[in-house]
Structure formats: C-alpha cells, structure tokens
Length: 456
View 1 (cartoon, rainbow, N blue to C red):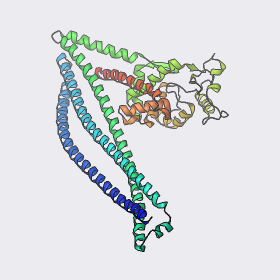
View 2 (view 1 turned 90 degrees about the horizontal axis):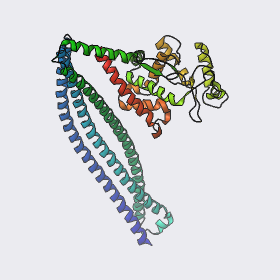
View 3 (view 1 turned 120 degrees about the horizontal axis):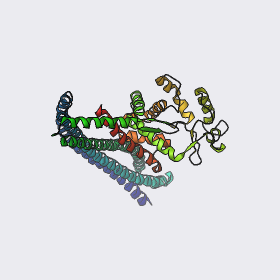
View 4 (view 1 turned 180 degrees about the vertical axis):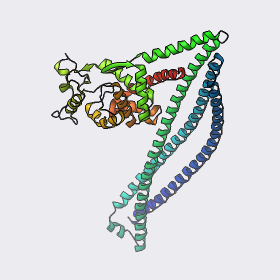
C-alpha cells in the first residue's frame, strides 16, 4: 500500500513539473513568433509608406494641373484635359486604396494567425488544466489518515503535502492564464473584425472610383469625337448636359405617405441635413427612397374611407394595450399640434401581427418621433412635422447619425441602414435585403449627384 501511494504521489510530482516545462515552452515559442511577425510588419510598413508618399506626391501634382485647367475658359481642349486629370486623379486614388487593401490584407492574415495561436494555446492550457484537476481529485480522494499511515517518516508526509499544495498553486496559475488568453483572444478578434470591416469599406471605395473613371472615360471619348469639329458642336454638347441636369433636378422624388417632391428639392433638403449631421447626402436620399419602395408593397392605413381595422386607434398601441409604448396618445398630440386630422393623415399599416402607425417619409413611430422633437425644433426653428419632406429628411439624418452612419464608409452606412429597418434584429439574414438595397440606391444617387456637381 505504501509503495502504491508513493508511486502515485511521485507520478503527480513528475506530472506537475512536466506541465510547468510545457507551459514555459509554449510561452517561448509564442513570443518568438510574435517577435518575427513584428519584424516583418515593420519592414512591410516601411515599403508601403514609401509607395504611399510617392502616390501622394503625384496626387498633388495632378490636382495642381487640374485646378489650372479648370481656371481656363471652356473649350473642348480644356474639358478633355480636365477629364484626363480627373481620370488620373481617380486612378491614383485607386492605387492608394489598393495599397491600403494590401496592408489590411496582410494585417488580417497576421491577426488571424494570432487568434489561431491564442486558441491553440488555450486548448493546450485547458488540456493541462483538465489533467491537473484529475490528479488533484485523486489526491483529494485519499484521506489524511491514509496518507499518515503510508508514511515511514514524517518528513515524507510534508514533502507530499508540499507537492499537493504546488498542484493547487498550478491550478490557480492555469485558471489565471486561461482567463488572460480568453481576454487576449477576444481583443484580437475585435481588432480583426475592425480590420475586415475597414477592408470592406476600402473595396467599396475602389468600386466607386472605378465607376467615376468609367463615366469620365465615356465623357472624354465623346469630346474627342468632336474635337476636330467646330466649337458650335461643343456648345451643343454643353447645352445637352445642362438640359440633362435640369431634367434630373425636376424629376419626381417620390416619398412614402407624402406627396412627391422634385429631385432638386430632395437634394437640397438632404444636403442641409448632411451639413447638420455629417451623414452622406446620397445615403440620406437612399434611406428615404428605400422606405418609399417598401411602402408600395406595404400600403397605407388611416385614410378617409379605410375600414375601421385600418384606422389609427386599431393599428398602433395605446395606453391600455400592454405595450412598452403609447403611440396613440402621442399621435393625437402631434396631429392636434399640427392641425392635421386624426383620420385622413396617412400611417403605415401593420406588418404581420405587429403594430403599424409609422408616420411620413421617414417612417418614425410616434414614440420615436417624440424623442427627436426637441433636436428637430432646434435645427428647423419650428415645430417638426413628420409628413413635411424637409423635416422628414432631417429626422432621418439624425436617426442614422445616432446609428453610426456619420462615421462614413460602407460598413457604417450598411449597418445603420439595417438598424434603421430592423432595430436590434439588424444582423438577422432575412433583413440583409434592406441594407443591400439602400447601398445600391446610394451608389446610383451618388452618380447623379456627381454629374450635377460637374455640370455646375
């Protein structure tokens, strides 16, 4: 019995030292990998910095020449040179962003490897912890009397007791290490996700630049086609562009649950809202266009002649409906304040078994609108009206600003659009269509806005 006990305790002691050595080796290897990776990162950053500085010098030169060309009187030659400069400018932007993609891609690879290494280290630490726990349990199953009876010398007892205590200390160390690794892993995953989002944003910017290049190339080709003809032909082209710009501005920009307005007015309202919030003009327009498109399928309630089931007091929650909000009371206050009728003021219909009652182009429910009234009044200088297009544009911009759209970039805007539509359920796959559609609208609208700015 004595020999068995001693062998068991000796084995545990050897096992403890083995685990200690193994953890030291893990740390040494991991540290060496990080040091090597950092050296590679420093060299790569130096090379990328040199390339970036070269591109930025070229950009400054192109911008200088472009400004000089724009200052000249309008001629075919001047416009061709301007377009060439704009194309070169866009191409340099693409080159610059491709460098950023390259840097981000390598950083993502390194972060991905770091996360994998941390996960592997955590797995090894968990395995070591599991074995230590099993060995500690074996010792705990032996009573103090059994240990004393198996010891020929009292000093053996204290040696074995010390081994047991060391096992306990090892458990504490491993627990702390696993907690630390878990924290590092989560931090690295967060950094990795941020870099992946940034890469996604830069790729979207490159696609936008490519669209600009294609548009400018088309315009340049058209001008070169008439470069050997008279300036009268050139004047005809300029006049055609002005007419096209006028047609875009006068085109109807439809709004949900409100009368449509001209695109020119919509652009003006969106630009004003953009200045107040920092949200991109095209994105504000895209949200409102998407809501209008959605409204075509959802329909409108609370109109004169609608059945009672579609009237305001049946489609929105009230004080006795057990909901977290009382939209009915707020709605009555809003329409009374604005001099609008309770029945006959359009509201959105319920989706499925949910509540309806969202108001105007921005589709705010009364409770949400109430939360923005003071901010809107401070900007607009008057009592805000959900069915007033200008007020709705400003409200939409404020809301998506609060959802992170003012940070700019594809990821921030796409996420804000999804949250605008689905709230806390924004990340569910079935809601992805909304964000994708908004970003497609934004790209098309940005092209129109760029054209109008060029004609001016």
